[in-house]
Length: 385
Ligand SMILES: Cc1ncc(COP(=O)(O)O)c(C=O)c1O
Image (cartoon, rainbow, N blue to C red; front, side, top):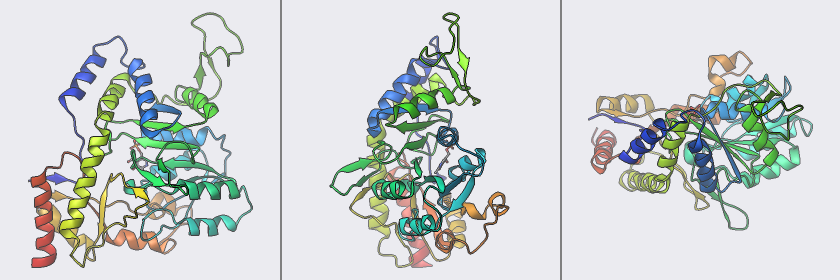
C-alpha cells in the first residue's frame, strides 16, 4: 500500500470536458477561461475572478497591480509555501515575517500589530496572510489593522477554497469573497482542492484592479478601446506596461469548471476524514490536534497533527507506505531568505511548530480502507510500541 498526503482526483466527466476543449477551435484562450472565472467568482462570492497560469503568477500580479516601488515592505507568515513571500521579492520588495499563533498556526494578529506599531503608519505596502492548511484568517480583524496602519491585503487562500469565518455580526464570510481583502489568490496545483495541472485564480471586488490584472496577465497588452491611445483597426492592440504571459489554457479551464462541480462534495469528504482522525486518535496524549473553533469552517487542504518525535514518526509512517509531508520549513530559515538577515531563533513559535508538525493523508478520494490503515498504523506506533 502507498498512500500519499495529498492527491488529485480525475473523473470521466473531467476527461470529457478536457477532450471537448482540446477538440474545439480554442485551446489557449477561449470560452472555458471566461466560464471558469464566472463560476469560480460565484463559488467564493466575489464580483470578479481572473484565471492565471498558477498561484505564484497570481501572487506576483497581486503585488504588481499595487504599483510597487523598490524597497517597499511586505509582511507574511514564516509558515507558508515560499511563494507567499517570493511575490514581494519578484517586485524588489523587502519581506518581513511576523510569528504565528501557536494554536492556529496562522499569523498572530497581536504580534503583527506590535510589528506595525514600530514603524510609521503606511510603512508597509501589503500584508500577505495565508489561510494555512485551510484555516481561514479572520480577515475582518486583519482589515481593521489594514485601515489603521494603511496597508493592502493580499490573502493567500491557496489552501482554502470554500473556507469561511464568522464575522462580528455572525455572518459567514467565505475566503476570497472580496469583502475584507483587496485581492485573494488561489492555486489549482494537483494536491489542492481543484486541480488543473498548474493553475491559479485571483478574486477581487475592485473593478479597476480586475481590469488591470487582466491586462497584466497578457504582456500588459490591451485591445479595449477605452484604454487605446490610437486605433488602426480591428487588429490593433497596445502594450502599456511590461508584464508576462500568465494565462491559463482553455483546456485547463475546462478541467477547472468540471472539478468545481465537485467542490462541495470534496469539502464534505475532507471534513469527514478530519472528523474520523480526531475521533479515532483523539485519545492519544502524544498527539496534538489542530484547534477547531466554532467560528470557522475549515477547508482542510491539510490535516496537520503535532507529535513529540516527528522525524522518527515520519520515517515509521514511510516504512508502512504512508507518505506524510511536512508543511512547512519556516521560510525565514531558507538559505535564500537568510541572506537578508533572518536566522534561527527569530520566530520561535514558527520554529517550534516546525519541529513537531506532520501532515497526514487528506484528499477526497482517500478510501475508508486507506484511512483505516493509516489510523491503525498510528495507533500501533503510539499505543503498542
Ligand atoms: C500557500 C501557497 N501559496 C502559493 C502557492 C503557489 O501556488 P502554485 O504552486 O500554483 O504556483 C502554493 C502552492 O503550493 C501554496 O501552498
